[in-house]
Length: 196
Image (cartoon, rainbow, N blue to C red; front, side, top):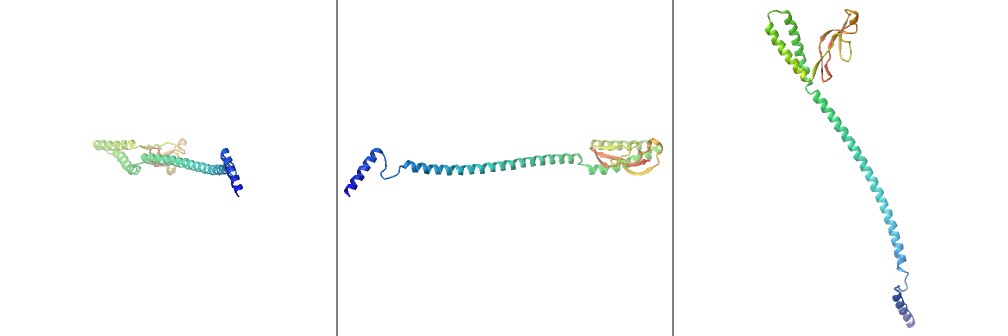
């Protein structure tokens, strides 16, 4: 036993001189193998995380682009709606005023037949002109129909009569009620008589 003990001591001293552990495998080999396995596992995890993050980023970019496009469409649509609303904001009020214009025109025609009412006629003409100017300032325009080709998109035919002359065929020969447009939108179609 003592021989074994001495032998071990000698080995230990020799190993210490060479900086080697006694009765053990070299440390570098096992540590390097362990580090290589850890490194490979780390690379696999790193790669899967990178793939996952790339996928999430692409998904977020797609959501952002879609949301941005949707917002642009919404903004354009609301802007267009606002413009339409401002163009036709007072449409119902202006439509309600049109019969008053008709009454004024009838009054003016009947005053032409009566004598000695010049001052009344001047007053009515003044009011009529002011009301007409008010409508024009608000974008209301009269639709010219008399002696124009009949157009079903712009005229409402009340009746047809034989044309007084050949050139009046298919044309408006009489306007029963004037038509008006508000900013290029027809708010009342002219009621007309068509020659055939």
